[in-house]
Image (cartoon, rainbow, N blue to C red; front, side, top):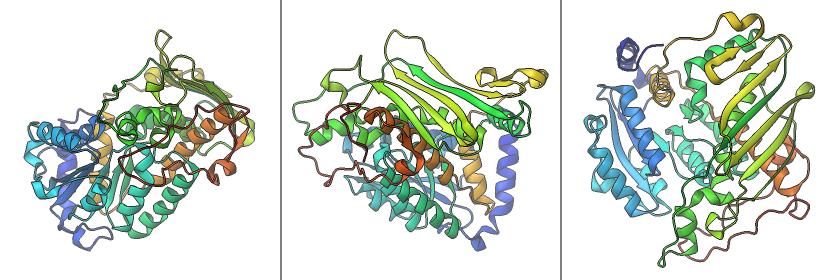
Length: 425
């Protein structure tokens, strides 16, 4: 791999422009024609703005990619993002957002999807992803969606159905599980799957870190606004941090094992962040995932100040181990360590997405990210209830966490889950 500003960038642009002329007849040809891809951002927070910058860096001087529309539930979020993005030197050459193509409110995503875009970036809180993925796919739009892609079983069922429709329509869908676009991980997984460490017999995955941001409640905020602006701390919005953050590590475990777990037994709690300002989620989890063949992966996720940090994955084989830090192998594979320079994976995933659209060979990552998301959900369900949870129980769960009505008004906070008391639904 080379630096994104180097030959790989030039080769990418040359290749995409070469196939552009034929895209008018490709299954997922975008409405604007072969030379223009109009992009809409739904969710104008830091990650959404970052995704737009990553996309513009990925395409470089390809003026055929235009930032066309913005959408967010809050006008101030949209205004701030619009101002910052328009003034960004990487983005300015691709900027084409007008007042008429800025949308706010809970229906902003519907209006943006209908504004003539060809590609939507979904960077809202995860609880909204299933409905937005479904709407974008039904409208025939290509998608970049952040991870995770849901927070409960009903949402994941909706995403899996959308994945099939996207496949039938020839739509490109790339997810923000960027390790799957990272050269070192790609090389390592290829080696693991070719037997470099023998048969995979277990693993450990971690996302242990300190606390994240919180926004103090303002007197004029309704319950709904307070929860939306602090979405990390509410299960209906984030899925809890095991889902919102730890999904990256669980995705690596599923990738290495080429499948999903059959069963989860876990525990967790709320020991440090006990103030109501932190909603009702946990601050630590420990889950034992059982994969086919009796393979077990230990998962840990923690957001507590003053503790040892560890964000990593270990895959254990009969002939050696893989350690994600430095892409290290033990055993016979130790000598051939990955040492190439990587493109920023947050940029590479957009290179791959746009390249697949240009080539008429759309990537579709919805099933894998949905399965990794459900892996996190089943672990959370086990920790919340104190029960073992199977894959089928998680997938077929009837617990729909989305509020019945999306309005700026009262919205009670559910009680903190209590193992042995909270029911498995």
